[in-house]
Amino acid sequence: MNYEAPRKAMVEEQLLRRGIKNERLLRAFSKVERHRFVSRDLMSNAYLDFPLSIGEGQTISQPYIVALMTEYLELTGNEKVLEIGTGSGYQTAILAELAKEVCSIERLSGLAAKAENLLKEMGYTNIKIKVGDGASGWPQQAPFDRIIITAAALQVPFALREQLKETGKIIAPLGEAFNQVLTLIEKKEGRFESTDICGCVFVPLISKSPEE
Ligand code: SAM
Image 1 (cartoon, rainbow, N blue to C red):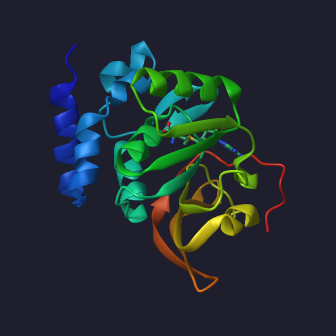
Image 2: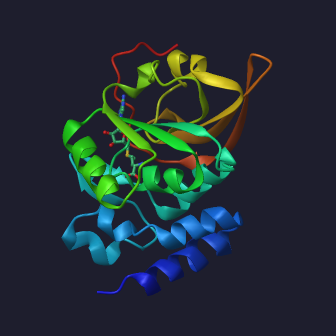
């Protein structure tokens, strides 16, 4: 099956029509083959307007939410980005199209290995993936210009705030199971400013680190 037409329709109907305007971002969504990040039986649904299962009880987020989160990061191509929750690797690929370097952490080794193989096969050379608890961040790779958390926590873990550069941004779903708010956090002169964006539903961030 040729997925170009459904991918074009996804960009026009789900992203452009809902107000996603950044041209680099729209180009990345037009380029990255989302169907390759799901199992064969779900490929025909890959460009539809909802999340899909990627196994192990996890999901690949709805295209619009991936676009919205990425848009708030305001990537210009020079940034080092930390992603918590690699999942299928789709969001990782979008970030790799738009930033200089992406470091991504996934707690489930099966998902991490699958995503790593696929992203290599697709030719990305600016992505590093590690298996672990993303709540501790990646101190050896820090500091980061941007951090994106793709699983919900009550608060942004302390280590991640510590590993963010001055003037950096974090985008994260914050809150309990059915009451989460997509939140933008900006670091300015050592202080963190939060802006609520919209309600959302994400799988939980599973961590041994205490919430601070
Ligand atoms: N962005 C992904 C994509 O495009 O496919 C979807 C991510 S999925 C909504 C959330 C992911 O976060 C899951 O794969 C889950 O295993 C992972 N996760 C949950 N808690 C984590 C933690 N503490 N550290 C790293 N990954 C975690």
